[in-house]
Length: 168
Image (tube, rainbow, N blue to C red; front, side):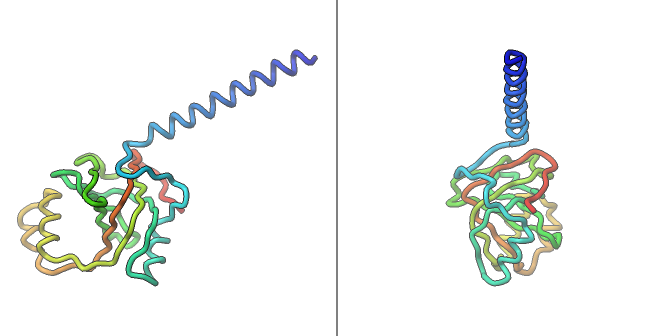
């Protein structure tokens, strides 16, 4: 009886370890890449929570996950994440120290850690960003006013493939 119990226990232990290993491999397969400083999901908040924290401050240090809507087609030196109101938040990278892939990132999700700031972006910079994104000339010429927006300077980024749940 003891041998049967021991054998069953061993089978269950091996099965549990194999299942854990498969889950870890599956989670790793969802990661497109990591960039900049090493970060983890621990302590990440939703974009909605980030917006709430900004109500009482001009800038806050946060770790947040959101959907990528665009990235710099020239160098990968910025990307945009969608905000709850449909607007976009530009994400640049600390000290221009790292870049993300230049194409194919739209629709993926990014976990970013750094400082988000309320800012007024001038016309020249807006036109530069539009040109980097490959926007048509008429759309670039239509930019005539500075824009109040959120700017995020990330010190670390993890990009996840495809549909992910944003942190709740």
